[in-house]
Image 1 (cartoon, rainbow over the protein chains, first blue to last red):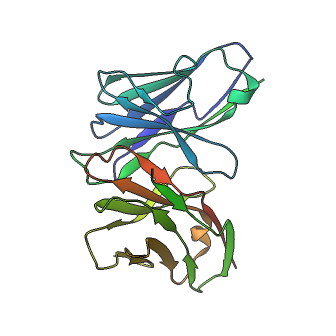
Image 2: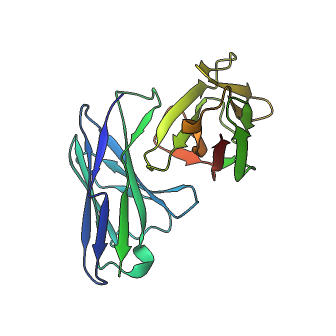
Image 3: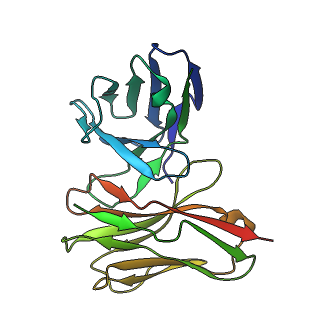
Length: 117
Length: 115
């Protein structure tokens, strides 16, 4: 199946700094990528939908100035957590759709664990 | 809005036995997909099985099969001949057509296969 890769897999930063997480589709072009946040033993919460070449669509309650999403190419989307605070510590997962239309399957990255000290 | 409910937070099954994970959903849509995803301890989500709502036949993938009851809005996953590698979190998910840009995930069921 298609491969989606996230980097870094783990990051620890100090409070007030910014952290960038990359999501790449390695063997397909992804016009749409999705960013999720997952708390321990909980489900995935959709944060935003990232469309190549346009502004991301954020879910209600997600601060767009806190979580900057850029989808500059068909294979790369980035999530930047700005001025990170301990409450931003979480597991962040990206996913991408393979192919055109709505065949349905999403491919997920390995996730990135952010710890803010 | 669509909601997906998994009423079993944790389940366990003996190796080689069969287990069924429950999922119900609520939607006014008639055209949609349903999925089961597996998230092992490594944390990467993996697609287990997919069902298209317009198909009456239940999807099957090797040891994994679903019981799709559209009228009841129920979508259970049956795992036969359970293996230790099946230990994981299992998420039921809903995607409406034709936009297909949003997945709605259930809260997950933690399955442990006991040797």
